[in-house]
Amino acid sequence: MGTAMTLTSLLDDLPPPAADGGPTDPDAVFEAFAGWAKERGFDLYPHQEEALFEIVTGANVILSTPTGSGKSLVAAGAHFAALADGRRTFYTAPIKALVSEKFFALCDMFGASEVGMLTGDASVNPDAPIICCTAEILASIALRDGAAADVGQVVMDEFHYYGEPDRGWAWQVPLVELPDAQFILMSATLGDMT
Image 1 (cartoon, one colour):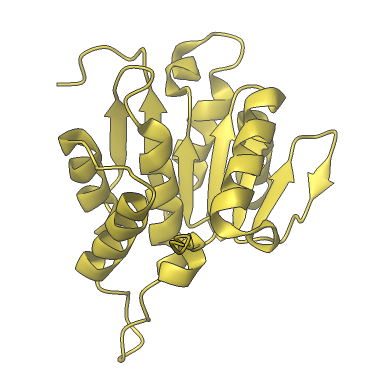
Image 2 (cartoon, helix red, strand yellow):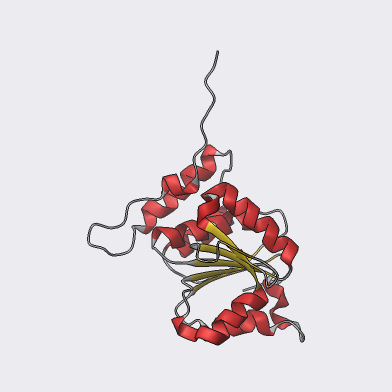
């Protein structure tokens, strides 16, 4: 009889912090995440590798790739990088259904104790290091707390809403009011970003 492969939580693969108390080695963070992905049968595409290289070094990233090209895996890597550095990370989307879907997916990856959800109608584990929320919730936090908000990173899904006359403010406000946060801006419909 063969033995079953045991899949680990992403938290099990977090590299140790730097001995001097500084940020975790970006190469170690990237390699740990890539190893976790490979364990699950995902070989990173070149655009995913490029985005993740930038994310682990603290850069802001715009990821404009077609639907089905692996933005969710890059988002998971971004959350992983934020946790490796002890930063609180937020995932935002325009609709509650997408926020809820991402909440459950991230609970599967990181464990339910590490993920919270804020939608305006519901609050689950609101002090967690990973928060899933609608864009308007994050914008309200940014307006209320500004640069003092406990937001180290923001993964904004469906970033093309930025230009919408009625709802674009919710994507614009965090960019202005959270100057110390790292932003990963994702959309399948932004077009050429050159």
